[in-house]
Length: 158
Image (cartoon, rainbow, N blue to C red):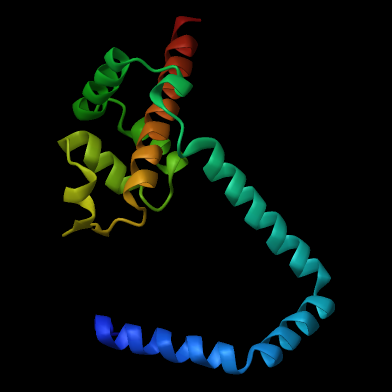
């Protein structure tokens, strides 16, 4: 399907905006009736919404300090990722951090690419996260990788 031009998108948004204004009462009535008929779905959707919101608020904006990772440890983890020695652990940590942006995160770390360079990548396509969320997910990736490697080394010592 072809993408709409910016002018066509704006025309569509304007049409929908005017439609909603003209038919506000009808739309509100339909929504109230649907919510009345589907209370279980309403509860489910609300629970999903708040879980997603809590997950993002808890992790995405966390700093290196919040995760207890020093710059020296970040440098060590970057070298581990680039070495390819723990590729399965790296891939798992990236998918835990963000399922949709996992490959973008790995490529960012392996090749030291900024978000701006990855936002529209030739092979991976468009990054599904905005800049702030991407870097938050990248920090979360390092946290998960750090934890996984510590567990792995702890298991090997016993």
